[in-house]
Image (cartoon, rainbow, N blue to C red; front, side):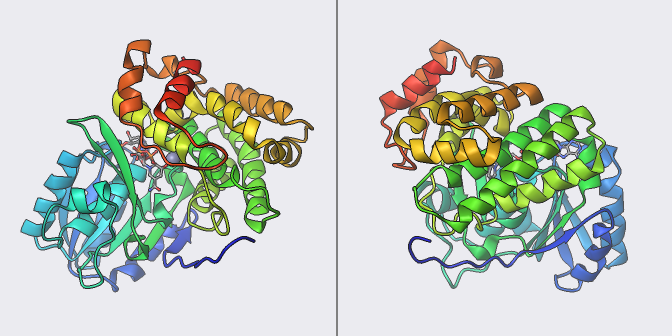
Amino acid sequence: MQGNFKYYNPTKLYFGEESLNYLKDELKNFGERVLLNYGSGSVKRNGIYDAVVTILREGGKTIIENPGVMSNPTLEKLHEGVRFARDNKVDWILALGGGSVCDYSKGVAASVFFDGDYWKEFWLEGHQPSAEQRILPVGCILTMAGTGSEMNGGCVITDAASNFKTGHVFDSRLMPKFSILNPRYTMTVPLEQMKAGIYDIMNHIFEQYFSDFDDNTSDYISEGLMRGLIVASRAAVKDPQNYEARSNIMWTATWALNTLIKCGKSEDWMVHMIGHSLGAWTHAPHGYCLAACSMAYYRRAMKKGRAKFERFARNVWGVQTAEEGLEALKKWMMEIGLPLTITEIGATPEMIDDIVSTTEIFPAGYLDLKPEDIKEILKESL
Ligand code: NZQ
Ligand code: ZN
């Protein structure tokens, strides 16, 4: 293992079909006034909202509702939530939804007691809240598997005015205090979102796997997660009501991005940076944006990271060469119905310069990209 690292993850997880039963016990740890954040209504249609609200009321909580947290939450909605939380003097936040609601809740929690321009401070300049700053605790009831937001400090916000989508990874104070993961809840997720979530999980693993060449325990864990995900994704696409598959997908999502498999790694994240920019311009689901630019990106990365791509081919797909490994990945993506081009998610050649202009670029993984390289990758992905 390379380097020195700290591993600390304070999120308590409750997993399984009965996991909502634990919400009652958790309520004792938090104040009376809860900000309940949720999305555009799926939790009302599938009954999860009613079940949660009943438990909150029985636990003596005053519920302050903040519906309408959109997929890929916007800066405007963040401002609204911060104002609302301040006006209502909430004690804590409960996120009820997918990664968007969970991310958004962390953003509000970090910003409510920040005196100044929190967007600039946390997202644009990447600072952490000071040690003295009060932060609202966040709990999460997850309804969609993919982002890992249920057990990390990530918070991705889109400034819709400038089509700039950017994330901040908050420190452990913003990781959810608890997360309830009931795979049954994910059964009503639309098929497109399920597939997007599956590729998001896979790509989180890639972003941490395709870097460095050393023999590293984190990479062995990653290979196990990838193999499990391939099996579960095939089963879930064939039968979305397959509990075994959906539960494995949900658990893999959590471990793919909860700070474990990055230990001792330098990481990459450039597919995510391109994907975020694609998302801001096309509004396609996050995982689809990643899938659409992945093949061009990894063909390029393979040239510099051949030994790792050979290991990927052997240990994940059971084939020999780096090229065969990427081909196996492509076949799997086609098999489960993921987009392989940015055209499929609504990007046009005319949009490429704009997408490049809002892509954040870091030296990462095997590549050190310049804006013209991003342009090439996008053109190859049309
Ligand atoms: O609006 P609602 O009604 O909640 O509907 C949502 C939304 O339309 C729906 N949905 C969720 N659970 C459902 C359901 N529909 C029916 N039944 C259910 N049980 O699915 C749609 C997508 O939900 P969303 O939360 O937007 O998806 P996801 O979980 O993929 O989150 C995407 C956001 O997370 C960010 C992305 O950039 C994006 O903004 N990410 C966060 C990360 C993190 N915290 O570490 C890392 C990721 O790489 C990612 O960037
Ligand atoms: Zn992602």
